[in-house]
Image 1: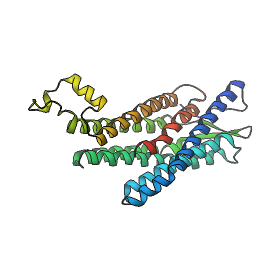
Image 2: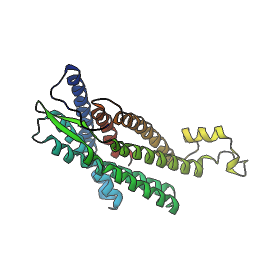
Image 3: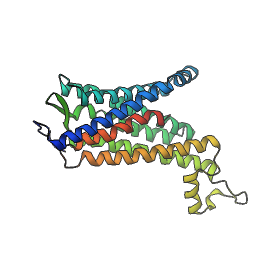
Image 4: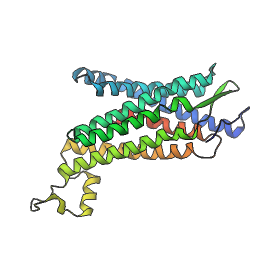
Length: 271
């Protein structure tokens, strides 16, 4: 998308779309608040018992960042703020905090599953830095305007979609690598008469990759939860990226409304 869209009044169609977007934000913020309150005691015990390190910092940043981002964008879309542009930049400043914190949790999981393999650690550290760099664009490129005392997200530059693309590539690479590590370590040892795990047919490999057959309970849980998270985020991010580059007046607004739920869920699903 190029340049902000000039809007001086609300047409009936625009008003309906803004109502839908506001409802999406309200739903996302409600889920985030409920999730935080519902799990607050358990998460406090978890953080208290675990060794406080980068993973703990990333978890807190991800949870707090996604909560404040969701509440902030809800406030932006429903309350007559004095300075819409400054408010948007302030609220979207929590986007890189939430996304990079969530991405680091996935990175920490990957390192543990891979046995802290140096090549994997280095490669995905670079990918994580790419996520950080592109996420920092979001608070910068968004544009907002006030119309009839209502803040309106007007547009963003074309390269704002880089954040969604980078996160999609990162999540895909991490998910496939973790799944391969899990299935490679356990899932291929299914026939005691085989002297080499590489003799299994391609169909069996695909089936084990999807079902987690023969994996230990903990590893199978990691695999299946990762699959659920990946399917949700891929669908959401693909739609959001498409809307960022779609030639529509409210495409950017729609992309934010689609992406919000994904960012809100990220912190919880990647632990």
